[in-house]
Image (tube, rainbow, N blue to C red; front, side):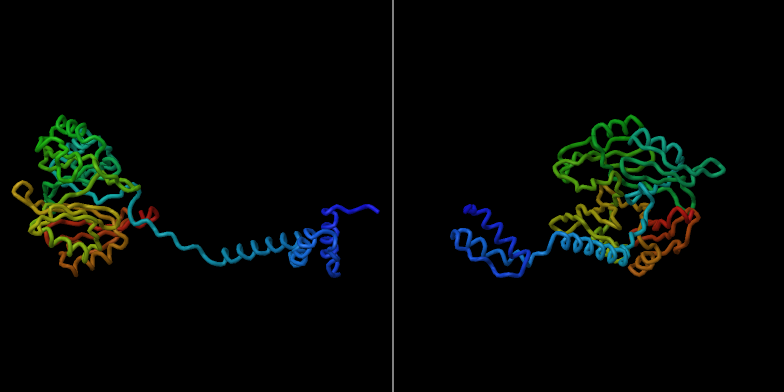
Length: 333
């Protein structure tokens, strides 16, 4: 009589249990076989391959049906125009065409928009610098020229500084590594009386979104009082602040709707400089009401402009003019 191998004995036991409901055969061949055969009843409860495949298909079908039944969250509509990430300083100057030429020559700017008036003056223009935008137009009686201060982040402060001097700017001080910010930083004035801080990031690493190339810079009397106003009136958040031992704001960065501007306490070297600022916000009407409640003066209540934006104008308690805007989409133009 042929003596079955251990493998054959085990196969026979498993086949018997899976194919019938008969009890386990006597495992008297070898102790090791007996131990393995004791596990065989567990196999009887396991689903067959066809069942497992059917179950998997059914589960996938039900999941797909549930996903189709639940609508995807609505994607937030953009409230700012494309390629306009910053709070834009809005320069109103005498001879805006010449100012455009300066921005292009000094800061490697790119003209994006120019809207002329019949007399040849400029109603509105935009110049891109780095990843940001500067706006400008010819000054008028309602909006006279104001010397403003702007902070530029550039790849090479020394090269930009030299190019600006060649374009007609005057040096306040050349780029240095000794600036309190830690950045390589210089300062100059342009032929129109505006001040520019030219800086290159040094000693710190910006976040994955990078740093905005253009940031308005406000020198204010009692600068600490600006913070509660912009928090209450413009929904702002202070993202960084340094104070002197006696409590003066030496520098603060403030964010509104994802874009930033900077402030500090005015001094003999940096006089208060009321500015024009253009900021995109999610809801112009709501922010206009908040700003008025917080102490701003209404200049122009919200309305829908023909270029597809909901816009309004306020003046803050420090004399700065804010052009608020919410982009309504290309279909509104």
